Every structure is written in structure tokens, then in C-alpha cells.
Length: 415
Ligand SMILES: [Zn+2]
Image 1 (cartoon, helix red, strand yellow):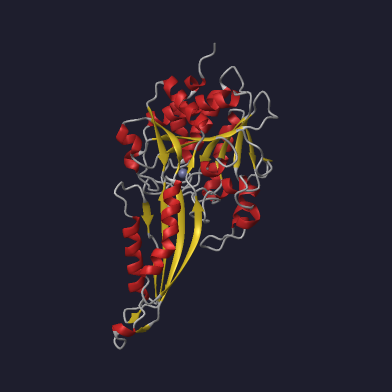
Image 2 (spheres, protein in one colour):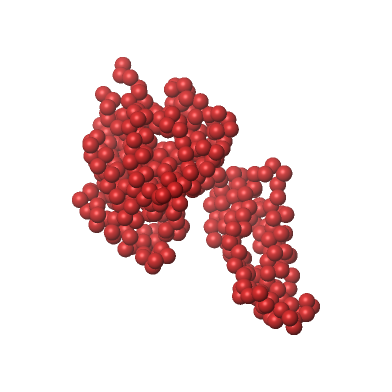
């Protein structure tokens, strides 16, 4: 009997590639600025393609610039198993958010190529386009288009701050990769596994090496506009004022009280607050603010989110309040079979593991809608992420890739 594929996972090689990939968009502060579809990302994608070719994986790309590196299975006509994440970063991002998942997947695929038994299904390492949503909002664009959650035509006109459209940026990436095979957008897939840094402290605090992700938190976002009347700060008595700022402060205070929970599991944020005209001697006439509400329990997200319009109405005073919901994503639970497959792989390898949910969104959210999906977390130091100081240990990185390799090999061979 051949040795398990995980024994072929080479931690040094994975660590070296993590260093090498981090050079594309490296910042002075030790982090990475590799925005989606930027020249830095084009360079990093070329490095991935070169590594893939060295080990016999076939690179291909779809119309949304999702990049696939395919290890052909014994029955290549079957839908492939996808494993991967993203390689775009925030403007002051770290070396591991996304990149770890793609390079752990590449390492897993390489380990599998070195096994005497070819997997039954093909395994494609994937780097999804624009997960971060930093240059072009919203994020998870490539996986949304791949899974039919959004239409490609609907994202093409979105612009970055400099006025460049997604359409133009996509064209520059596809021109740089014109020699790659083109794949149709949204082909059938057998399953998806995403490895990722935890971006929280759950694993670190539990002293565990790998997280078997149970699901992803639900999220609702709103935009609230409070309208009052601009007037003179010196001449308008309180009784005649319609001060949009005082109303907005009262509304935010009422919301924060209503969202308070003893268990500290509700995530409620007013992160954007815009006052007009924002002049010292003018009673504010208009305030616009954002609401971001998240929870793991679908009933809680639904119940609290549904209360928001009424809470705003009650606290708005003499001003008017217009509340618009912008996003409503229910919490999701990954299938039990995928979680069990990952947990069993960790157990076989003697890697300590823990079941835990993901508070952050990932491409796995959209893949979950079209195929059995699972996620593997590894610890990241002090939970710091979206930060140049993002850090992981080489041992954890290797352990995560070994668990991924075992789970992927099993799923690709499943009947
Ligand atoms: Zn990420």
C-alpha cells in the first residue's frame, strides 16, 4: 500500500512559495498590497502558472479571470474537485490571507501528483478573482459570477477610484494570459475545499492546529438617511430646529441598545457616518450612515434586522428617516459530510482540531450554493489580519496543507 499523500507535502516548499508570492506587491512594512486585477496580481498569477507547469498541472482561465491549475484525474470527464482561495489583498494586507489557501492547495496538488495512484476526478487549484473587494466593490466577485450569484455583465461597469472599470482590468489580465486555455464560466464541480487563516483567536486560544469550519456568519447591511433642515447656528432656537445630527445620534444610540446582547455574539457596526454640510455654524440638514449586522444564527439575523426600520422610525424625532437594506446573506452551515471528511483527515494525521464557525465571509459562501463545500482554518497570530503584521507558523501551515491534501485526495477518489 502506498504511503498517504500527506507524507509528500513539503513544508519547506510551501513556505518558500509563500515568501516568493509575497514579493508581488510587497510593502515597506512587511505586508502586501496586491489589489485585484492589478499588475502586481498579474505577476503573482504568472508565478502560480509557472509553478503549476513545473509539476504538470494544466493552467486555464475563465472570462472572470478565475485561474485554474488542473491535475487531470483518471476520469477527466467527471466534474473536478476545486481547492483554493484568492491571491488579491487589501491595500495594507498581509502575506497569508487568501495566498495561504491557494499555495496550500498547490502543495496538496503537488503531493497528490507524487502519489502512485492518480485521483479519479481531476483536482483544480483555483484562485478566485477579487475576493477582497478593495479595489472593485463588492468582494467575492469571481466566485459570485462563477456560481451564477451575479452576472458577468453586471460587474463589468464597476469602477475603481481611478475610474478604471472591471471590464478594462479584466481585459488586461486576460491579455497577459492569452496563451492559457480558456474555460467556460461556471462549469459543474464535484466539491470545493478552501483553506484559510482563521483571522480570529479561536484556534490560538484553544491551542489547536486546524479548524474544521462549521459555517459562515449571516450578514445584513443597511444605509440610513436622516433628513432635517439646514439652519443658522446662532439664530435658530431649539424649538425650531430639525437637526439631522441629533436625530442620527439618537437613532444610532437606540439601535446600539437594541442590538446589545449579554452573550456578546451579535456583531453590530455603524462604520460610516456622513454629516452634511459638516460646517461649524450650520445646523446639520442631512446625515447618512451605514449599518452592518452579523450573527451565526439565521433567526437572530432575521429578527434583529427586521427591527431596524421600526427602531429608526421611533428615534428619529423631528427629522425623517429613509432606511434601505443593501445586503441580506443568511448564515450557512457546511455539509456534515465535508466537515467529517476534514476532521477524519486531521485525526488520521494526529493534528489537533476544533470545529468552529467563520465570522468573516469567504468565496466558500458562494461555492456552498452549487457544490458540497468545506473550509479548513489554521491559526493566525493574535487573530491579526487585513494588516501588514499578519503572521502564521510554518508548522501550522504545513499541518493545514497535509489535512487539505488528505481530504482532497479522498473526495477526488469518492464514488
Ligand atoms: Zn481571504
